[in-house]
Image (cartoon, rainbow, N blue to C red):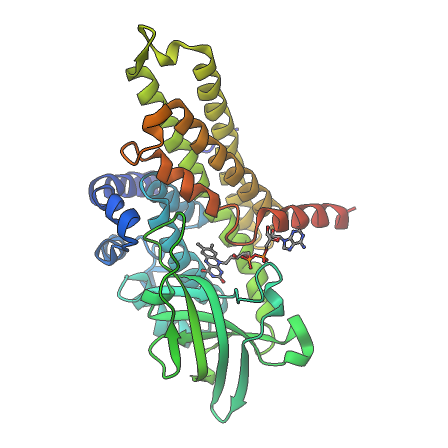
Length: 381
Ligand SMILES: Cc1cc2nc3c(=O)[nH]c(=O)nc-3n(C[C@H](O)[C@H](O)[C@H](O)COP(=O)(O)OP(=O)(O)OC[C@H]3O[C@@H](n4cnc5c(N)ncnc54)[C@H](O)[C@@H]3O)c2cc1C
């Protein structure tokens, strides 16, 4: 079994690969050293029509599919996993989410500006006290006339400090627990919204991650996404799409780890020979290659499963769990092949190793993913 992309998907792959190599690569060092997000490049991606791959053209989308979304994230992440992460939070968590769960009026109001890159999007589920147990969130939304007043805070929100719009989940019926959550589309310029200074992270630098504080923010009722108290369903359906497509970032890290290891090991000589001729180096290269190929099949298979059924929970969880653990291993293995040079910034593999770890944590940790897989399997018996 292999994945053959169709003509349209291959064209997207070539376009993004060229964009990543020519436009993104030159700023990756600045992104990492200064935690700088290249907003101009984000907008360029919008002009290329690549920020709304899964939504219809009438909303400035590309009317394509989740495989295309995976291809875009993979090609960006071959050069910058951090840029891909921010694009994923925008295109997938915000744009695709509003299209799937918003009404026609909300689609017309928000999607063209988001998909064209005029606006940037974010999504806030996680709170300081509610991470893996996300549905235990404490942010509340109290009904008042034509508005809901949102109070509370979100943390670790990708793009928060530079977003124009954020999807925020809040408890409209705290007494109902997980069943009393509602999703709101919250413009970030509303009175009472503020964001923290971006976290100084180990990796994924340049993808800005911040807290969002809400102090009686009046969000109009017309910005409720889906039905009141039904937000938990939106959270759950979105998580599988998010996991399946984000796994493409891990896959990209494995591929880049292999590229860097191969190039270096052929050029580097010790004991009068290229180190690629040493069997212990060959073992590492062969393992990265084989496991990356397995990861590739799993990643695109799971995206396809999610395309057909948004609730493909175990498939999406398995894909990102496997791909993320391998990408951390592959980045470190490649770094080892580069010896002392791998430990410097010059060869870039240390950045990919730092970036790789995030995919084992974000969008639900690998422990939670294992729980989802086992629970679904047991339930199906
Ligand atoms: C860079 C970055 C970007 C992010 N972007 C976003 C975003 O855009 N939007 C958003 O809403 N969130 C975002 N997150 C948050 C992310 O989803 C959470 O960090 C993640 O869900 C884990 O929550 P936590 O950090 O509170 O860890 P905790 O839930 O406190 O977990 C701590 C440890 O306990 C383990 N654990 C917890 N429960 C169990 C259990 N039942 N069984 C076994 N082990 C368990 C976990 O696996 C982990 O190892 C981001 C995080 C990071 C780091």
